[in-house]
Image (tube, rainbow, N blue to C red):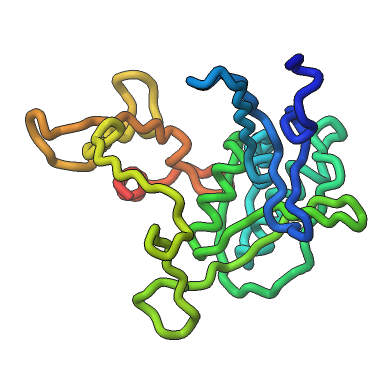
Length: 239
């Protein structure tokens, strides 16, 4: 079947929304056609939740934010996706109404990936972010929410259990791998080449020692650009 005759749902850059569901719009970005053992064509279509749109932006200019975490998250999105240069604006993206979440944070970022920074900020307060779709006005809404504990270890909220026994899990796989495991961090602060401040975090030895290099040259100055004392820099590199 010619590519231009594939189902509309498979077209790249299409937004797929479940009927009556504004919480899980998906941006299709992958399609794959193969022939199975029976000689039949199989079309695999994949996409990602719209929150990944923030991965398309870098934080331009030093952005210093302090206040409620909800407001800080929205400010980073506003300044890099909405109230920004025309070519950087994500069309029809708006911010949700304030929910009054009380968690607070102080955060500074510069030239970092926006999505990565939003994840770091939200994790400090156990908040999450998403981009919803409003079919009435065709707007995409950047929203903040706090998860609900539905684990079996609590008795406040109804529990949710996923299991093949309950037929809400189709299949499962267990993988035990150390492929990307690292247990010793070589943290390099400010300076050039051999003069950089180095701190080693972790004390494993021999073949059990798995090293990773972390470039932390951005650590060493306060919010207004003043150089911090060496002892304070050292503590920050270790933390």
